[in-house]
Length: 381
Image 1 (cartoon, rainbow, N blue to C red):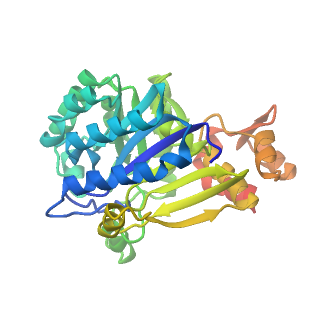
Image 2 (spheres, helix red, strand yellow; image 1 turned 90 degrees about the vertical axis):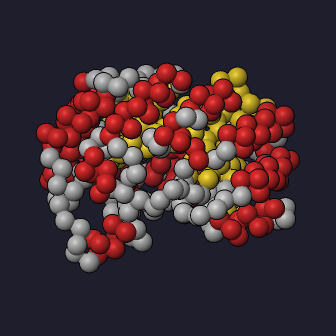
């Protein structure tokens, strides 16, 4: 495998409850055998060992689900196994997702002592009524306490917020976001509420029972308000939904958006890697019990490996790269895929101030970010 730098993602598929907006591969179980799940992760690390060595691991990310519900021993053993069997960069980023529950907050110091140096907290809102509507089990007070504790234990703290919620007003969001920015974290992930098929909210929306969602014009105002407040408070938009103080960007996610190499271990996890000058995509078995069974038997739980065509790789560059503030280098894309973007289309988008095009670097302007999907569609058609 022709990899020099790589990221590794571990997917923990379990949560205490399923949020009505969530379309991630997360599940609720009454009993989890942590010993067997640890064995499964270790077996999968060993399956990848020969393929990804002598690559340097630049980032490790525990996502989910709710990986902070894992036993701290499991995190410790996984990190120790990686250190013994691979080369980690001196400044390796080790992230872990958590919720603001009392159980998880008590683990923050332990996670820090194990080597986790970045934590991402699923706050979602500082409004108690909206937290209940979103299916969250914590209160706004607990969320604030969690952020405070995290900031005392970690230099790099992110927390997520959802805006464009049911019946939410712009003024209320301005106050909430301003408060969020005052808490001292260096990174904010700010997502406009999206209604996904197969979720509880998706089913309600299809039945016409999900009221109070913003229309297109109000959604635009929410988006612009978010960017303005973040800019005024020195949180720069390095990705369409992610804002950070300089130097506190999430390297792991940047690697996704730059179409880098990453290995995913866990139910439903997707990965990308380069081999023999071709790019490959794969995903793990999605069902947690099936993935666990295969992994314990040391049977590779990868469901499907696909060699991406040059066109698919080109589309990936556009879809992922234009989400970032720095955009994409057209020469780099052409060298890696053999495809070029139609200059007539780019000049059209440039004339209407949707994009910036300088020195072969294509990036979205704020006007283009508002209609990201339409800009990408225009480029790819």
